[in-house]
Length: 434
Ligand code: XUL
Ligand code: CO
Image (cartoon, rainbow, N blue to C red; front, side, top):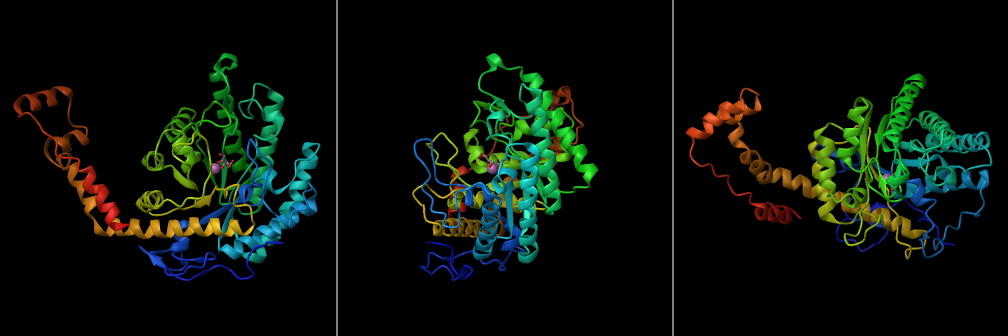
């Protein structure tokens, strides 16, 4: 029976060849004024780590979970939670995230499901108290059950909509009870398979109403955690309304919800939307709405959400540059919304996978810090826009000019020429820091 190591994973340094040691992640090492632990606020996803069994559309599960008796009983769910907290302890991760239905079974009625959830949350509460581990965010699973096949808050059926609302209400209550620092809305099936049978405007109005009710209930129960929307363009639906950062921000602004939400950006969702992770982070940051990150990565030439552990140093560097630019997380963190490969079926592979992700982020942080200390990239960007620092540029930025003013200026000016963008130089500076 393969389980987790008996000792917590230790830092052994870059020379170590031990697959069960950190080579770069040292929780208390200070980089750019903060410990690594505080920069990352690593979170572990209950759904992948405890419930991911390695099944895919072509094959059954492969994962060996020796602690799991395969039943939907409360005692199995509670035992799984204990194993999970042991895992968090072993890999040195302080936060976790869950859906209601990952931690507790879905029962025959809503009342029974609520009761089952309460029983497992009792266990989670005890485990949090004894371990000091914290809930980064909670959420409701509104996409697995057949009732949600055509959406939850965008379902064409009002009874389904009400059921989803009840589930979110309960999930918010338990998140609040567990001291959750946030609550995420990922609209797994909020979208359409075809517009031919869909009243899109009506569905969007319903979704906004749903979120307004959640904002009201948050106030009512005194839940002070941050609300997040997690963009994803498709999968499972053909089109999902929260398709990317810009679409989410526009929706939130249109329906007067922007003050109440930030975004939880996931790497593989960014790439499915045809963007880079940096693009999605920068778009959220520009609107002061970068809240949290679901850290993973995809395979560029594969068209679906593979949720791989983030091991690409270029990616972790870019992500850390964005996080450092905003001064670090407040309520958010780096939640590994990632699953080991189906072929990595042993329980110990869960440990290997998280070490790989944590080490990759430790290196990303150090490289990003080096890029910032080096200063050439920042200086280049500043210089690139220098014509807006004074003269006509400063007048444009401060709103003093009209089109006629600019015409007058352009007529009196010589043919303008912009300086080189020097992309290759910048790319090689980043490479030098790696
Ligand atoms: C699905 C996904 C979800 C959300 C939470 O692609 O990322 O697990 O993070 O519902
Ligand atoms: Co996610």
